[in-house]
Image 1 (spheres, one colour):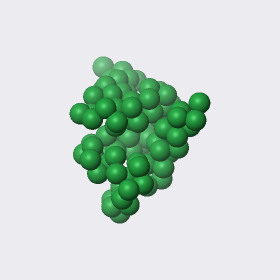
Image 2 (image 1 turned 90 degrees about the vertical axis):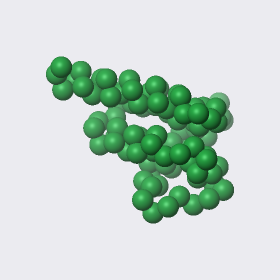
Image 3 (image 1 turned 180 degrees about the vertical axis):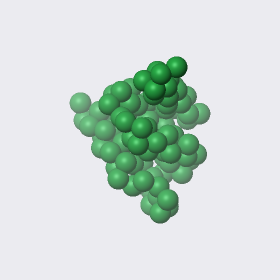
Image 4 (image 1 turned 60 degrees about the horizontal axis):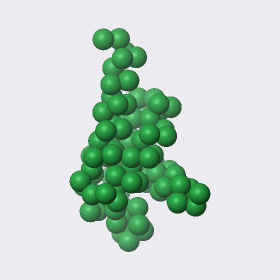
Length: 92
């Protein structure tokens, strides 16, 4: 496989994982974000998305809903992008 094929497979896997979380709420937040943005993300961006996808649904949903502050190890800037993307979709 070439490097381009590797990143293509990684993008596909991340989109799948974003849509198959275990809770419908997080599927509907991360899935559309992944569909809209993974093709434009470079390796570093995919790392950021993957780190978020690796989080457990219950705390992640609380962070997205503003019910709890995420811990310091969470990429808050990227989480804010995902939240803004979701809010924009709801406003349509």
